[in-house]
Structures are given as C-alpha cells and as structure tokens.
Image 1: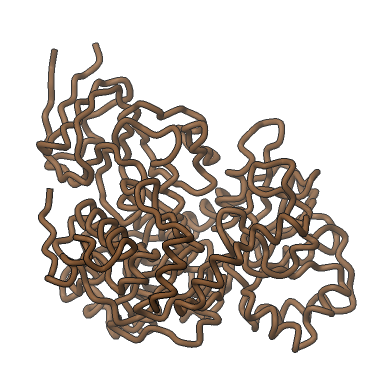
Image 2 (image 1 turned 45 degrees about the horizontal axis):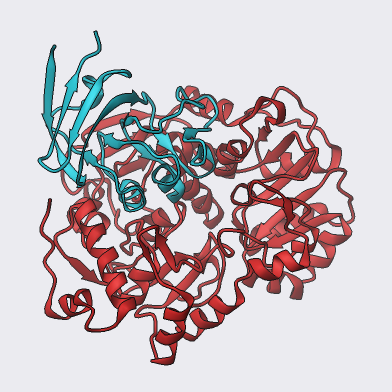
Length: 436
Length: 133
C-alpha cells in the first residue's frame, strides 16, 4: 500500500495531540489517501460542500454530538467556507413545503414526511445549531452553486460532494475538487491530493463529437447522459454543441455524472480550461473519439423513458434544484391554470424565500402546484400512494426514481421529456412527449 | 486446475477467496442498489436483483451518485475488483473495509466469469483466478 507523507502538524493531529475530533478526521483522511493512492494531503483554499449533518463519515469514523459541542465551545471552525448540501440525512425532509409532502420517509411506511413531529426530528436542529456556529452555511441544496454567493475561483482547491456538483466545480468554475466533501475535509481544510487536484489529470483524454447542434435543455440533458455513458470515468472534450446556458449546465452536469462518473469535461470556447480544443487536450491526441449523433441521442432518450402507459399520476420538476429563471418561466406558463394531477417542484431553500418575495409561491399554489425546497424525490425514496407513473424532465431523476420501486407489484414508470411536456402532463394527466 | 494471477493496485487490504459475480455493465448506487438485500435495483441491469453478498464483485467501472458507497454497507460483497478507479470506489471502500483492488496489469473483466473462484490477496497485491470446470 502507498505511504502517506504527513507534515508535522498533520502528524500531531493523527497522534491525537490536538483532540479527538481532529484525530478522527485525520485518520479518515489518511485512510482515504491510501485507498485513492494519494501520497499526501493538499491544503484547501476554495470552498467545501458536504452532505449533512455528516458527523458519521462511515461506520468506522464518527464524531458524536458531545464531541461537536466540545469542539464548538473551544472555538472550532470549518477551515474553508462550507455549505450544506441537500436537506438533512437520512430523512431528507423538504425544508419548505413539507406540510404537503404526503409520502413516507425512505422505506418506512409508518413514518410520514408531513407529520410535524417527524419533520421536527428530521431537521436535526441541535446538530445544525452547532454546525452553524462552526461557520457552516445551511444552504441545503444539491445545486449549491445557485445560492452560495461565494464561488471558488479558477484553480482553487475545494472539497465538494454531490455527483452533479463535481463537474460543475471542475469544468464550469475551473476550481478543483474530487468527490470527497465531508466533515473531515471541510473542518481540517485538507483533502487527499490526487485526481482533479493535479493539473495533468484535468486535460481531456477522449473526444466526443455530435452531429446534432445541442441547444435545447432536453438535448443537453440527453446528450449529457449519453456522453457520460460513453466517457465513463474519463475526461471528455465535447464538441459540436452550442454554448450551454446556466440551466443547460445544470442538466449536463447532473446527466453526465449519472450516465458515467465524469468529474471533469471541456467544451472548447465555453469552459474556462478549454480556450481551444488543443489546449483542452493538453496538446496530446485523444485516446479515442466517439460520435453521439441522432441514433445515440434517440437511444438514450428511449432508455430514459420507461413507461407502457401515457396516463401520468404525478409530475416532478427540480432535479437539480430549479434556478430562479426556470421558476420565473414556470410561473409564466402555469399562472391562471390549474393542474389536474400532483405537480411537485423542488428548489433551493434560499431561492424559496426569493420566490416568495417575487409572488411565485402564491401563483404556484393558486395553480395547485406544490413548491418545495431542499430535498429530492428519489432521495426521499417514496412517491404518494397510488402514483404508478411519474413525469420528469431530467435524466438523473428518470434514472434513479425507479430504483426506489423495483418490485413488479409496485413498479414505477417514468415519462421523460421537456419541461413543457411535463407541464402539459400536469395540466392534462396525459403524456404527449416525443423525441423531435 | 488452471489458475491465472494478475497484479493490481490495492485500495483496501485483506485476503479472501470467494466466487466471482461479474457485472458486464458499470454499477450504479444510490436508489439503484439495495444494501439491505445486497443487490442492484437498476432497471434493465444484467445484475438486477442478483445478490452479491459474500461474492467477489467484479465490474468494469462505476457511475452516478456518491450513493455508490451503499455497495459497501449492509449485505456487502467479500471483495471489490474493478478495472477503472474513481472517487466513487474510494467512498465505497471507506464504508466496506473489505479487500478492494483496481488498475490491474491485465483487465480482470477479460479473465473472470461469474462462478469462477477468485483469491483476492490485497495484502500482496494480486488476484488469482481459478476457472470453473
């Protein structure tokens, strides 16, 4: 196994000279280094993002609430600006809109998200009070970049979590993160030095072309999923597309890390480390080239659709959490109308407040739409009773939501298409989506 | 009995010998694995509901959510053998604490079939495959 080289300060932490919490965190990081093949740690100068409360990092590395209390009383702070991803684990309560969330909590039939007592417990208030004192900003979003207001800059070393956020940090922001955001990395401000922290590993290794100008939100989503399947764990350079919008980056990042495990990609002329194709490839030839053309896009679209009926029972939007412009567009399309089936829309908690100020919450309520924040339907692991077919507009949700219901007697079906097709389904109860 | 030995990089140490379960497709975690029952729940997956508990789980790569680590919880495999490394495997190995290896001299996917016996010696950095029949 690899030898991990620690500096004197890190050794003291590992030896327990700086208290139990730092020791546990350092043990966790050293083990992570050994598994990853990293010879040392890197001091982080960017930002942190972690699933919370996150005191239990694994079955073998855990700090207690008492540890945390003691740490806070001693003035312990996160070493880097740290943001809370999604709503509290493991219950995943929506931060807003939970009163309308008429489902059970993951695989526990008798425990309901709309039960006030359950919600109160699921919010883990004691933990968050302490974590906030340590500096954590409780953004509670899988799309934290929408509300963090403080982004890492190009080249900064970060430690983030959430599959869709890893390529956002690396490819879109040009900052550097592996998939490792945790209490240990954020509190100590250190992470194993390997993978995306190292310049050499960030260059493109394969070239993915398309012969259809990718420019609509759905095209970006389908293309992202297909590109992820093709790229697997490599760094693809994507060519032949239009320039993605912020929404389309959200779709691309979540889809490409669902179809594959793409932490980094380049779009020459769009992403910051790809001023040209040659630069993105680091001056080398790609290991291979692949075409994602009409045939491959249609195949991905068909794979993501998983239904034998066009009778839709529910619509879910907000994977990743909807940004403000998408909320504005949704409100424009739905104002004055009335949905026929449940339509749940998930956004980031800090945007929920802004949506209230804009009058959007009221308009959506008037249309019968439930606006929620912070959570994720697939992560909650349940749909309302009687829902057998759900309509979604992202590959990520389409891919995961059926996994909660693998059994034949309660198999969930998925209609996947554009946001407009989902809105139409909400208003009519019918799926009329098609690949155009 | 024909034996094939392949050297690779150790992610998590330990020695175990067990039957192989080979996934021809990448594996995905989060909702697409049920750690309480020890099988993948990904629709259309060749290992859909095939239990991997106690097996040497062999796969080409991993994809998707950080919830991949659920393969390392509950009813977990005896060992993990995979062609390509990524942070998802790191998260999984941190949970599992069972032998795990990757980045082999020869791709184990080309040599191991479901049902073969595989000795994973992650203390010394090799796997040894005994072909069935």
